[in-house]
Image 1 (cartoon, rainbow, N blue to C red):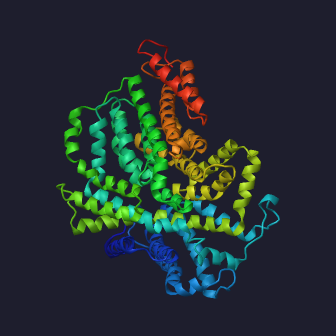
Image 2 (image 1 turned 135 degrees about the horizontal axis):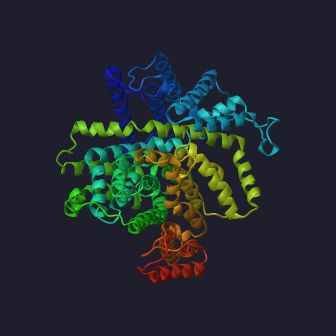
Image 3 (image 1 turned 180 degrees about the vertical axis):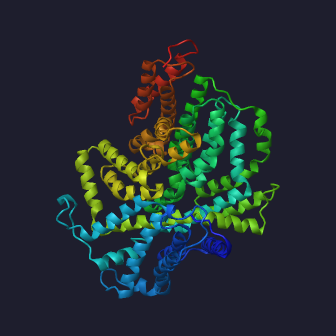
Length: 624
């Protein structure tokens, strides 16, 4: 990313600030019609890709402060398609798709937008998503090619109809995925900017330090709790790792945790932020749009799996600390509980946000209320009081993070449009059903593998959108509840951040910890084991998503806690004493069976876990 200076930097600051103010205006007074709002959003963001990001990062000095002439030209050209839509919006809306011919200007501008969008995405997001989007787009035009396997052949789309679908409708580039970036994500990024400027972000860390720092393995618990709080708002695993890990990982190493374990704890905790309500990153908003349900329905369904995920990680770092005799931090190095409780009002923006989302208010309205509350609580914090300058900085700092999400969502729209035009989605459904032999469990494994592979090279939101477009119809056809199917894909797109060979969050944590990346990644997989198992479980047991009867929900909560404890004991090899290999295996089997959809099997397994944990007392036992 270029480090601009002088007039260009000041001009770009005002440009980004104006973009943030525009989106705040539409959040308060109402957005434009969906297609127009999305076009304005992309038109504002896409030129930034060419101004801020060089053609090849290695080709320019690290602190380069100039923009080459050709990037200025590309930035200007990238805005032309959007200006055309804005100027001719009424005419575009009156067109009959598939009937009216495209004008030369529409063909040229549509093709130009596709090319420049892919180039901008390559610069800011990376090559993998460009390859995926380009492959789907080209397939739509050449899907009758003789070199393709017969199962993949179809009826091709003419060039002008391809441009029409991608450029002049809300089913391609300007699909619902870009709509989420243009509305919800933009406002929540600004909300994050206000949390940072108001001191609420720092308070999250102080809160975690005060309540967990002196306990056994305190720094690891600080990492888990602070990342859960911070990651829920940030929605980016890698950003969360660098945001909290630079503090927590050295502390973990200081009290005796091995470097790869310290990095793994931070990677798992940071990754889980995207499945922790209330915000859950951009993907959750896309999910609500695709399902056509209120966002609070996604929040409620996701809360139990998220709590089980973090509960397991906390348990394992606690057991590891007990097993290895690791202590907490000295109390004098940490904020006191009393001082943290005195500033509990700093939680007001988050509490209000959660309340309003659960009460049925729209995410945008809830975020606006959170922004106002964050500003209000800053007034009670010396050194963090937000005057006009700080308010504008918060709007700018939040808005400047939108290019990655915007371009990723727009490029994902190319895939969504290609699937709609080519019908390849139906072929994928047929392929999954055929390969799985109609067995839902095997279909889940196939979709999980696809989601993991997509997540290794794409941002979480893009991986989820593509995985949902391909995998959810197959799972739904085999009887999986649509909400469970979407959350299944969402989970596996997220945990690809800790799954080698491409585990971005684990690698980021390893760079801070100074540990081997793959060893850190595999350790993170062990700590995050529940994230691999629970998605299968909630596809069979709706109680884990709180979508069953009252008794079913209570049973699922109890069995989930039992499974969490059992898997923690099995993986760490400790439960009030060291466990033998046979005892660990027994815990592992009981923990997995506790998540079975059968009520009797689940209750018996949960009882076995409870009995075993009471039986193993603190006495000498063989080391695992």
